[in-house]
Length: 456
Image (tube, rainbow, N blue to C red):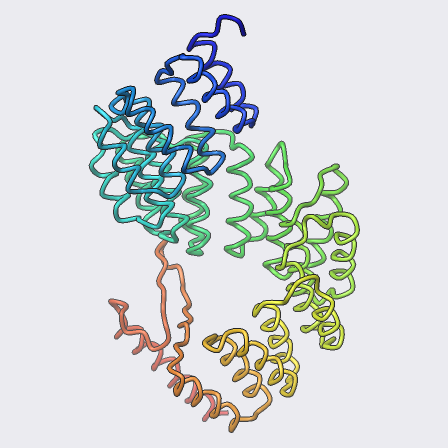
C-alpha cells in the first residue's frame, strides 16, 4: 500500500481480525507504528479484539501503554475495548482501572466489566455494579441473567428476568436460553412453562437457540412429550437440536429412542460430535444396551477419533460394569491410551454395588485411595457395596474410618415444586419455614401406615 494512512491501516487490521488472522493483525499494527502512522480510537478498538482472541495479556498491556502515551485512556470507545479485553483475560483489577480512566463510561463499558466479574465468580461485585449503572439495556440484563445462570444462582436469574420485564426492557433471543438453563437446573417445570409462554409473547417465532433450550429444559424436567414437541417445532435443526433430543431420551432412560433419533440425525447428513456420542453412551448405559453402546464407541474410535474424550471412555467402563461384565471393564481400563483417573475406578465400583462384588470393590477402592486419600465418595461407594451385600461389620468399619480421617460427606438433597416454587430439603433439615408442619405430616403418614400394617 504506497500511501497508507490511519484509515486504510485500521481497515486492513479490521479485515485481518475478522478473518481470524490475529497474529498478522498485531504484526501490521506494529508495522504502522514503525511507519509513523498514529493510531486512533478505532484502531485500538479493533486491535484489542485480536489481543483478546490470542489470549495474550502481554500484547494487551503493550497496547494499553500505547493508548496512555497517546492520551486516549479517557476515550469511551478505547476505554470500553480495554475493559472488555482485561475482563476476558480474567484481569479484573486492570479492567476496573480502565473503567475508572474512562470519561463518561457508557452501557457497553459497564456491561464488559460486569461480564468480567461474573466470569471470575465475583457475582456480588457484578450485582453492585449493575445496580449502580446509570443506564441498563437488554445486553446488560442478559449479561447478569447469563452470569447468574452459569454461577448456579438459578433463582436470582429468574428474579432478574422478572425485574427486567417490570422495568419495561424487552427480552431478546439471547435472554431465554440462559434463563431456561437456570429453570432446568432448579427442576422448576411450572416456572419454565411460564417462561416458554413469555418467549412466544415477546419473540413470536422462536429461533433455533431458544428451541434447543426448550428441548433440553423439558427433557431435564422429565416432561419428555413436551421436549419432543418442542424439537418438532424447530425449523432449521442443527447438531445441538439433535443432541438435546438424544440426551433427553438418554436422561429419561429411553435408550432405544435415543438410538432411533441418532439414525434419523445421520439421515439428515449432520455429523455427530462428542456430545452426541456421550448422550448415546449414557442412553445405552441406563437401558442395558451394552453391545450397541460399545459398537458406537468402536465406530467413533475408527471414524472420528478426534471426538473422543476421557468421559467417553469412562462411560464404556460404566457400561460394562453395570452389565456385570467386569473382565471386559478391567481389560478396557488396562488398554486405555492414558492413565485412568478416579472417575474411571468409581464407575467400576458403581457396578460392584449393583452386583454385590465385594472383593473387586475393595481392590478398586485401594486404587482410588492411592490416587486421592481424601476422596470421601469412594468410601461411601464402598460402604454402599458392603451394605447391599449385607456386610454390616464392614459398613461400620468404613464409617469409622471416614470419621477417624476427618472426611466430610457431601450432603445429598431432594426438591419438590409446589405452586411454581421449588423447595429444597437436606437430610434432617430444619431450615424450611414450615419444617414443623412438614415433620408433623410425615409422622402422621408413618403412623397411618403402621396402623394399616397392624390391621393386615
